[in-house]
Length: 485
Length: 108
Image 1 (cartoon, helix red, strand yellow):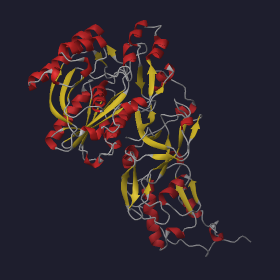
Image 2 (cartoon, one colour; image 1 turned 90 degrees about the vertical axis):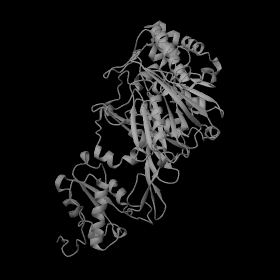
Image 3 (spheres, chains in turn purple, brown; image 1 turned 180 degrees about the horizontal axis):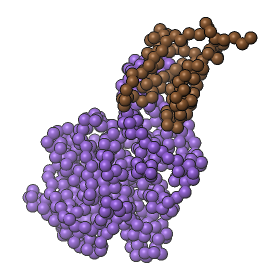
Image 4 (tube, chains in turn brown, cyan; image 1 turned 180 degrees about the vertical axis):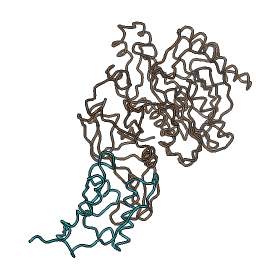
């Protein structure tokens, strides 16, 4: 049986109340008040589509042997690299083997479900496990509808040929060169066409077309489904779509517009993760994406679902929130406005690719080493054992530390270091199981930290080299969100 | 009259890495490779070493400040480890460095 083996979500900690956007920019475009309800999730200054995809993947792969993964797919429309496989950075961070299939899915907001379909087909054909990680970090211009509506988030689904929590029953896709939103290869901000046209011709035609196509193909009716998941941030259009499909409102999954915003490629999978948090065995789920057409996928929840309802998904991240009470900070974090970081901020940081390749396991997956002679765990990976009584040479086994967590050993806040989120917070972290390293702390203030407190590791942008357009990643320490139930 | 170090010190052993385009090895690997060979040549163990010197070309384009990079990779005992930057002559200076403190026993 092929289907979903696990799911995960990720919502960044910082939330921007939409009235703050209106308060800052309403003078330019007062009509944005119509979208000024609730809040949207905003990626931290050190987050992007890759880091959020990894965070969702880590959530999804709790308890999963990383060696068992056969494919890693990454879906986004905001990849940091055009050439350099983004999915390999994600796969490396998740601790997957090198001998896997990997691919980037991009170009439309249905790329998340397209990646999921490819993963289902991969596992159907080859067996094993495939992981889909999707995330988006789209930008709208200041005072635009998109700025109001778009939110940043990630979601992940693991497809498996055994112990599935939701069996894959079938799919139907439609593909249209229908341009409602557009970003050219050299464009930073989303541009959209007339909204009535997007609603009437886009959402309200294509989503029913995909659903009715699936129903006709398999001889079922929309009313047969217990949960219907589709993204559409127009409330009126949602009502019309529900009416056209003749489905009851309560069966339609909340679009999280008021808490997250539209997270692009990730959004259908984020809504799916939220649905699976509370789904019951036997439920029929219809998942539909939207963007240059639609993918519609039919799943049926199995008895295994209860094993995965252990805190993974979206709720835990939604609860871990902090107000971003400052519109200017949002502009600087998202690279929409230049900010002075002093002469130190101009320091040229080169990337030595030969070194990155030699050390890629330690950098991407936070792999350390464990001595076969004395059992001492150490980071960074060593050839000579650090234990003074052992000192064995080349007796190391690799050990994946990214999911092990640790504790704060020392910390400081540095107002002199160049940062767009001062003070830069860093210090020594002890790994659970042994080893210690110097790390940045993120998603916290200095006041949140104390010596000995538990931390989790989060894959983040370590630094961006604007001269060469290189985004470099490493793990940072984040105060532990709380143990999974 | 000033006393020289003649007949008071010896080069006990030496090691050298393989030459080549070493994409497989970082500076830590090269240090381990050279020291391992030197220790074998000398017939002593790492714990017998009482002081160490590291010579690098220039720190800005090399392995960084200080000698901790070397002591960390080699996990030397708790001994003084000193870095020397002197361009192409950096390697000679460390080997010439020891005689001054060495006969007096720096680690005592």
